[in-house]
Image (cartoon, rainbow, N blue to C red; front, side, top):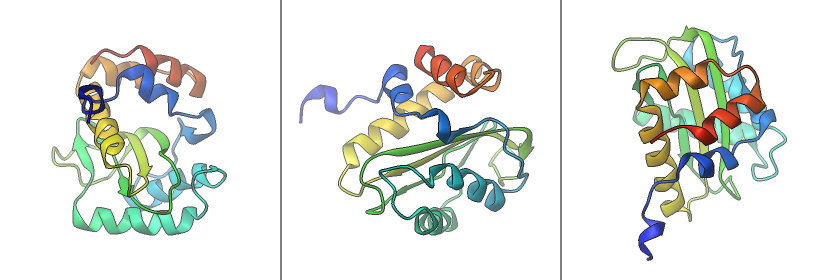
Length: 162
């Protein structure tokens, strides 16, 4: 494996994985399961995910093993699954906040829902580590929370600092 294959994805690479129709900047749900269901609906037409409802069930199974809330208003629900032909990402933002049982007890305001094929372990790790590193910075979270629309969210994502 080359050294660059071990490195986390950088902001521009992460932004390139985002599609405007999979970014919901006004999530209505205020609890975890309804928020996940609301967000998975944005993936219903994604060409790399043929069965969104089955993907939703796999996300729920993963949540039962370990809560994917990270604290600081973030959650990263994810599943490595053969239901995905490629990486799929949906992003949700909630102004009100979502009761997600986060370790810090605070509501979640940003959700990054990720699906990766089973065979893509390296890319999966690069994606999760890159996102976690970026979102660890309060200034980055604030910029994403202030994005005006999906296109702006992607532009902001591409320019975040690690």
